[in-house]
Amino acid sequence: MYRKEFYVFDQNRPVPAMIRNYEDRDFPGLIRVQQESFPPPFPSELWWNTEQLHNHVILFPEGALCIEIDGEIAGSMTGLLVDFDPAYPEHTWEEITDNGYIRNHNPNGNTLYVVDISVRPSYRKLGLGKWLMLSMYDVVVHKGLERLLGGGRMPGYHKKANEMTPEQYLEAVLKGALKDPVITFLLRCGRTPVQVVPNYLEDKESDNYGTLMEWKNPFYTSISKQGE
Image 1 (spheres, helix red, strand yellow):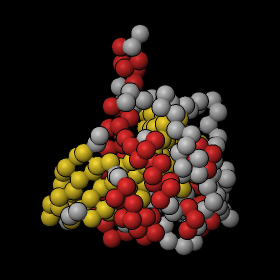
Image 2 (cartoon, helix red, strand yellow; image 1 turned 90 degrees about the horizontal axis):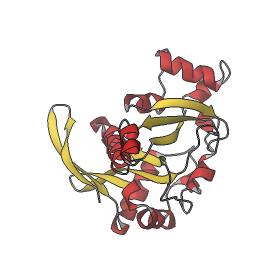
Image 3 (spheres, helix red, strand yellow; image 1 turned 135 degrees about the vertical axis):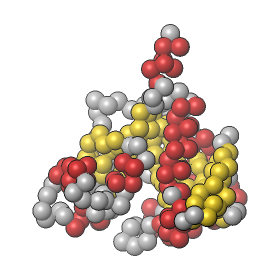
């Protein structure tokens, strides 16, 4: 199981932090993270419920991470394993994550798929989202997987939808002409875009688009050769 203790910084002040696998006792705190992280117009029915969280800790506990600051759950990240074929990249969040219930988790999958990452707004200045992402990269390397993959929301796109296509919006973000709260964050975490996916998630701010973004395991080729 995963446990990492370290310091984050509130300006120049070191603050103790811990990333670990979440458990049943953490469910109320995890639901609170969702409620604070995704306020309306984000659909409240997409917040975690206890059945989904229970599945996460039973089916793939390695992919169920939370971060604590002073004993308080400040954020979480959840994943499952899928067998991803880059030749057929299009899918919806609901399809690939089983609507967050991850009953389709494939222990033999080649890809860790991000179901969700969220940090409570009052803690975001501490850079916790990036620490969660880096910790999930640890899981990818530890399990010898090919990649981490997930669809990023594009919450800034609705402001530009009358001016450009989602692909043009993504290109503008990549060139630094625009900044998107989610896509820019994922780029800062080392993720790279694969393609824009229509009807990825019910999300008015993104006009239901998502950008599929991956992080490839830099050790994957070596791991594969060792197994031959």
